Amino acid sequence: MYQFWETMLFRTGGYAGQPWPKHAVLNVGAAHFDRWLILFRNTLDEHFEGPKVAEAKNWAASIGDTFQRRMEKKKLGLWANFSGDAPNDLKN
Ligand code: HEM
Image: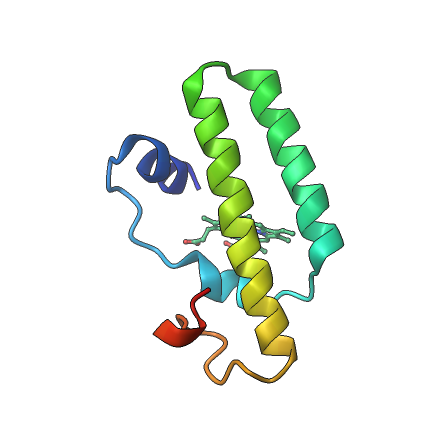
């Protein structure tokens, strides 16, 4: 998790994992992501300040949206290979 955020915010390149498969198997929806985002933003504000805070919040919102879109497609049966990476035409 540390390496993920370091790589997102400081381009350190230490994270080479794939977050999506870990989330693809979860039974969560929009309400959970909304709550996750509120907790994440509050935690950032509690512990950090400066331009990277806004950047982290933007990444979190955008990646969370992507996860949610993929989950919706998976539920609709449009996602054949839901535990792996997305085929290009379904990425967004
Ligand atoms: C409701 C929202 C979310 C839930 C319930 C959730 C839950 C989880 C769970 C269960 C894991 C696997 C932990 C493990 O077994 O190692 C995980 C890993 C992870 N999550 Fe989330 N997550 C959520 C949202 C997000 C979002 C929005 C992001 C990105 C900004 C994110 C980034 C990650 C990363 C980077 C990992 C580690 C993946 C790896 O092992 O390489 N998660 N999350």
